[in-house]
Image 1 (cartoon, rainbow, N blue to C red):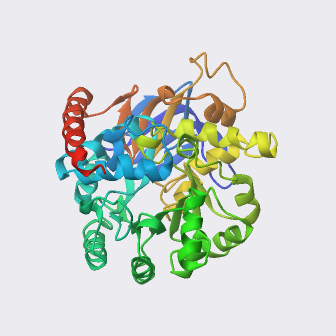
Image 2 (image 1 turned 30 degrees about the vertical axis):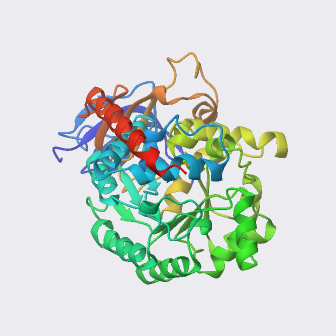
Image 3 (image 1 turned 120 degrees about the vertical axis):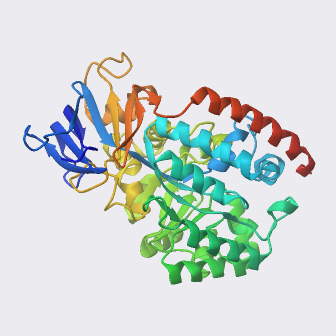
Length: 448
């Protein structure tokens, strides 16, 4: 038995496998992978470190398919605004003010929050510059991530540091692909990340579509978050936002479109036919008053869907539990109490997220042969979660991030007893306060 073997005993394991089995028993982890589930004998686990998880629930690590680690330092500075004013007046000036050093701190703070809340895989959209800093932070963190530099070569009131030349944007994205795709033992992969149709030329989007097809590289963008995007593409291209993205080659089974709030049935057919994933971000859509995505309609049309928190300035947290609860509750007044049941939402946050990123053979469920990306919850001792009831409902409707007691990513323990392992949180937050001060001072020169 490997020296890195763990024998987690006496847990309730929510597998999220094809049969959605819940297993009462043990987990054996070796070399970062799950080797056995259920009844495990001492001989099979000889030499493994034993940890008793009696009274605990083990679930797959959450997979969040739309995150902005670059924006974490802007939390609580961009509130109560519509999307386009939020971008022009706060977020774009902030991103223009970031340095490699301050972006690194932003990413580290965001990753710490995500990990403490049980997220072990993300799809992240960086800013225009310094994307290597995000890759380095993710590599150190231990989690999985698809990362990508934000691409922008057009737009009104875009600060000069964010307004790229088209060739430069593509060139830098390809360099980052070569650098980071498959890095950190395969935990890090690359995704082309044009911001959205409003801030990208048609040429840029077409070149992204071509490069994605050539390299079999994912695409991550925003789409149909507000009706403004549809108005924009109809005015300039004569098509809805989704139809335009299909026209330029952006749709497909490797594409994840964040939000998808303002779509019609024709858009849904395009998404379903091309197997393009919509990432639902309920907190962000509510806070920016963008609207409420019709998730049951996506299921009806067969559109792949996932969940994400978006960025800290439009949420203001990166908490998968908050997104799950809202994703379940928001649909019920419009579509009935069974419109988005707890077990369906738990799928969105785990295996469906992994499927959207093309890593469902590695993570997203607790199965033999998959990576040990696991979250250990303590529910029974919490008055807010107990004393019992249907397990998926307890996780989706009642649990919160304080119920996360342990987190493992590729078998490496990242959280123990609710605290980050190997991270000086006090020192990190002191650095974050200094970085925040620096960025807020610098961004003033980019506000118009």
